[in-house]
Every structure is written in structure tokens, then in C-alpha cells.
Length: 239
Image 1 (cartoon, one colour):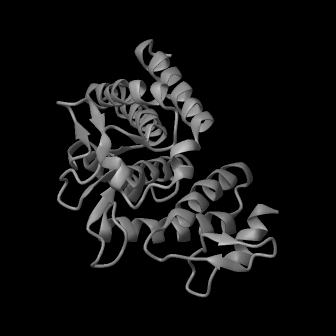
Image 2 (tube, rainbow, N blue to C red):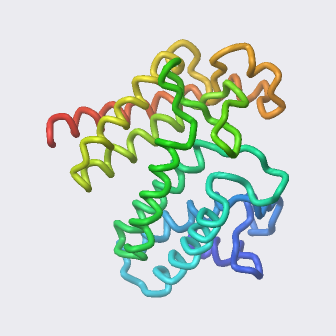
């Protein structure tokens, strides 16, 4: 049923909307991001693993290629010259998508390259502040601090995926980086288990933060933390 819904929702240019009604009619669509395509590629890649149906693989490839092209062109930024910031969470989502698609045997070469690009950006893109033990959600396009907004859920998920990649590649540097992300995010998420957490007063002036974003998301953050901690447990014990 969900697969049929993708077919109904797909726009003439092959992309997907952000939000539809129950009949599949588009309600919102922003072509600056490819969140819908990344989630669709992930889901359809796993569906292909179960069914082996070539038409499902073809759709997974189609949506992955859209996301792959966007990330190679824009990196973790929204399309458009006016976009002057970039997001840690987008790298996390790109990494997850590439891992799941690769796991289905689809676009393996491209997925290997994309996972490395996303990890390199998270490690070296200016998000990680070792001095203050912070991981920033938003930085400038050049990697400079513009806000104190942090998203523990994104950090835990990134840690989870990075440690999994460390296991796949037997890379101790990736394992250590994933554990460090958890260490930096844990105090913030326990003190204020929200979707977005301010690390200082700078956040109160950010137009990107709404009252809902400061009061919603505690359960999902804790779930992400649990998964990341279980991953650390398995990784450190070679399970």
C-alpha cells in the first residue's frame, strides 16, 4: 500500500512532495531539500531486499540518484544562493540513506563515496566544538558558528550510523568519533530532552526556533540515545 502511495504522490519531474493528503495530492513541496527522496530510497531499498522485484529497485535507484545529485551539488545546504547556513542533521540523513541503499546492493560505489562525504563533513565541517564539548546543528556555509542550536536526536543518530560504518570498515577513528558525539550530546539531552536544545542565550534570538521545537521531541531523543548506547555496547564488545 505504501509503495502504491509513492507512485501516486510522485510529481511529474520524478521528485516527491513533503506533505500530501490521503489521496496523494501535494500539500507542500520545497525543492531545496530531498528529505522525501532520501526516506523513500531507504524504504524502497529495504522493500527490494524483501521482494527482489526489479521495479522496486528501479524506484529506489531513482530517488537515491536525486538525493545523491543534490548532495554532491549543494552539500548540507538548501539549494539557492540565499542559503548561507548548513545543517548537521542533513549529513546524518544522507549517511543513513547511503548505508541502507548500499546494504540492499544498490549503487554500491556511489553509496561508498556518499557515506565518506557525509562523514567527512560531520567531522570537519565546523559542527563539532571540542573546546565547549558541543555539536552544533546549524553553522555557516564556511563552518563558522552562527547559532547555539543543538539537536541531540540528530547527534545520537549520527553517532549510531558512524559507529556502524566504523564496524563495516574496521575503522577505530570512526568508532571513537561516534562515541565522542554521544558524550557531547548526553548532558544536553538529559537536562532538557527537547528536539532542539539551546547551549546558551544565543538561541532565543534565532528565527528558526519555535515554542513547539523547544517542547517537543523528548521521547524520540531518548530512543535515539538508547540506540546509540546499545551500538556503543556492541561495538566495544565486538558483538
